[in-house]
Length: 516
Image (tube, rainbow, N blue to C red; front, side, top):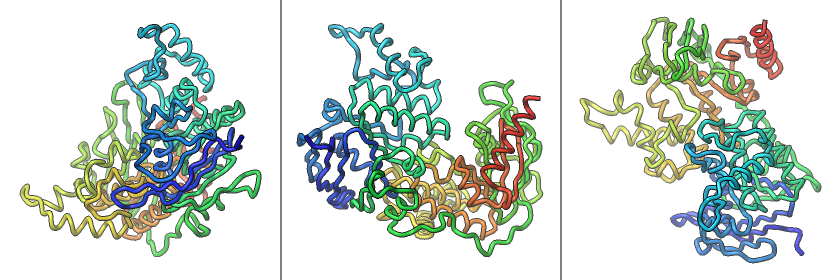
């Protein structure tokens, strides 16, 4: 009997004549956690879609051998019958159905065609206990739960299908550190019970923590497989395989930048929850950003950083908003998105797919959309020639990897989608640019390119605000940082003071102050 539960041999898959996978090989041992690493667009998700039947047998070349048997999966149902279940980055849950209904959706517990609700709820409770949610209400609507719990419900849903090989595609991309560690520990627990897992992730510290083996894919080809019990691996070794070279400095040095006068000033900013006029989300916020300066907003998930950014950007979040905003020393009213753009303030959302892009539109359309009213139209007539010139310029300027500006944005990798969002707001020629989680869900190489864009913005005299849940990113990119905790400023740190320890000290000190 082979020690491998899965062998994918010489897999080749093309789209419109372009090879997404080129003779890829993958071997996964039974009972191990095996990571797939590579830059955005390397072919990781495509390979897993081949395995799970999303891309059916006949649309690719090569063989899948599972439990010693050559398989030809034509759809997800085929692979699930064999015990292979994939959980995609975009969760496939129905928000208006209960936890129990979601866990058994498409896998209903029925008696002679009639759903047995007692059995459904009982077995749902058993599945929740297996993923560390023993006290969760199986009758609660999934839409009322946080992303972390929803991710666990997806795993519970997979376990209910008698999963043997569980595939997780970027499972921690939207989770905070605590939720991420809980999910990784659940994976380790499943491994101890004989389950096999394949994980795709850009968070290399998590890969190092949880994985027994790592297969690296670059440009649709298998580069190497590293095993913890043989040669071992760490973050730097994985990066070398991913990008083809040593990456000695993950944060490019910012040179030739002179920090100038204050561009944005926010004074006594107060915001209440959009659905609860009595719940104050932000209290007496005072911040400023200078020309050529990159200022970080650090803090834990739910601290109020995104709420601050969105409330500043045309009151996109909240109600009963009060306080003053000044740009170049002049007080301005930005109570609509249009007014914010006209006053040279731009906001790059943390949710690029939901709020940042029109995925069925092409690169050009997405890039020029926000700038069109001011820069690409005259009395309602669009200047298409200028739009084409601008889109081509920015595609080259920030290195968007695509065949042309006519390529559909939804077909791009996450890193290139993020660059399109950045270009969209750079084209509005803002003086202040707020970047909310600008590198979430993208690989280390694409991150470096985004950091280079941030440096270019600073060099051009823009005032840049970076919101990030990754403390090393705040440390590596920012000249100064505000620490936000429970909707208040908990501290302000200069470049030399920004460390993970100092950020946490500010948060803990603020918590103690609130307890008194």
